[in-house]
Length: 328
View (tube, rainbow, N blue to C red):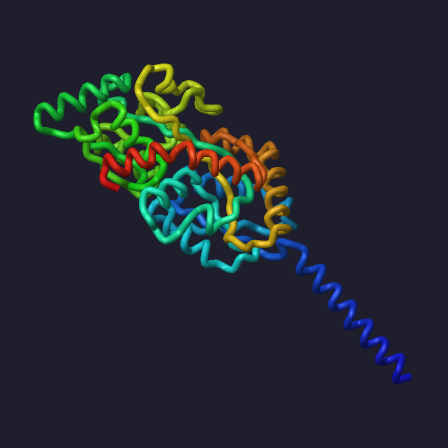
């Protein structure tokens, strides 16, 4: 009788262990936090919220909880995420170009490649030179001429961007330098794309450099002078490129991707990457992204890392040039 009882207890204990192990491997088994380094309403935040609305059915019906930690061109959020337990329950949706630029232009005590593991790319944004239509500027050449004229009169045009050190700032400064007007303008940094757009809508600045998606729904008041790309945007196809307008520039875009703290289990990375793939293929994801003016581009973990390493090498000469030219 005692033997049977002991055997029964051992068997029950074994089943409990097996069940617990299975539960632990059933990632995710609770809500997953996704950190965004900008205020709500910007392109990065919008990608995160679209993803959170679609992906639960692919991750055991667990929610993605979006946490906004703006400031420092994502440095504040990156430090927060990298310090989290690498268990797959704290992730970050990056404006990856800014993540690289911000940690390369200056030593911030954190590194995108050393401190994070890419999970998947979900999209990309192009950088655009934008003006309020009331300014009357129709081409980048007209804007350059206005800046030079202002300088000759002892003044400087004010330009807005989502924060110093980010990829948009880098793209903007590179364009200014290429056109010889870096010393003819005064930059006015904001905390994210939405406040930058608000400044443009309020005519507080002469022009701005923002993610092209920020102009969606505002083309009655804002004029896109050109995007910093050789090819037109996948969604906002009416926006001209600086390439076709013969305006000197440096091709710079921003991959949008989900990443995890270094040391996150490979099986969790793969699980989430596969779920993101399914989410980005979902009709609702594509519909919401298109409505927001956002492109949908998926790459898995390995391909995302390879892309980012390639972009870093490609952007390095520009980063060095900008650091030297603006004293960074």
